[in-house]
Length: 252
Image (tube, rainbow, N blue to C red; front, side, top):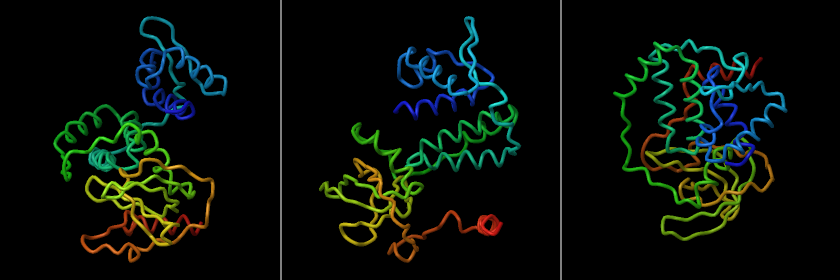
């Protein structure tokens, strides 16, 4: 984790437990850095105006001003369970870090009674996958999450190092267009500049992804372009409620 990401994550960690404190040693273990590094980071956040306070004593530490935290969520148990399951289903996706962070925020602002019931019920829910989730090689892990997770949002051309199903590696320039999830695998749908065609790249086969800084006009992605010969392709935005909300926001 680079320093910018760590600073953001520090604020989110303190926000999640506020007004309770976290010690510098606990935070150092959490982010796998030294206590001195954490103290420097917290000092930088304080100087930038983030309301972080130090509480002295054996049980003290650093805490975030309660006014800087989220208000309690009015989720019902069923709603909280649905959100938890949905976020957990992203555990093997390029969005797993964001999903994990979002789940911690949900847990942090739920009332204790609903949280306890949700935790008890969630223990009864299981997800069936194709098999054990393969661990990514260490050299792939740092690049996989940030560049791929933000690929659609930034719209930048990516230069990727990719291994096909036979293990043959190549370097390609692609324009990210969308994602398709199937089982535990997620496929980045993109325009391949080398092939001048739409291609699907399995996320765990992308060893490196480097934004080039170029942001071309976004290409339109239609389901018919994917040429999927089996299974049902379902968009997460096709529900009547979501379509209605999107239309309402667009027209205002």
